[in-house]
Image (cartoon, rainbow, N blue to C red; front, top):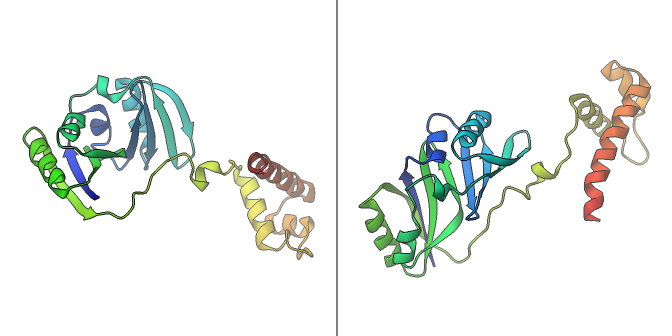
Length: 214
């Protein structure tokens, strides 16, 4: 099996949304809607563009990234599709599509390397395309934005994070304990009960997250 990565300069909503910033969009198409994974420093700006042009049904904010479910599929809002080229030349799309710097990055698979060449020749007749890479594969890895450790971790407040990390660093969770909540409180400059409250809240959040997998 062979894989090629193509950069296609486009004019669709997601290409326009990433054209002048460092945010990237990964897209999984579901016919009636799109699942988007946004990363970068300007996700809110890109989200606003997506919401204005395609519509947003659901949004999960993970802090450094966002997962979006759109109101409609991208196919209803653009013309730079590649499905017809894929079918014509017996190639497969390896999700997700990725948008960055105003271009669409697509990973295409084929059993015969000649099919990739023919796909490239056909699509360059209608769209601006460059080849990023081409290689022979022994296996294919899948990607998903929903199963990362970062997205699974609970959201702690700044103080909860500070107290929990300091307690761990000072050996509060070791057996036997190497510090006390009183010593942690003195180091941070708050009361002992405040430290204990933040630790309990952080511990509860971790417990609530982990119990689903036990």
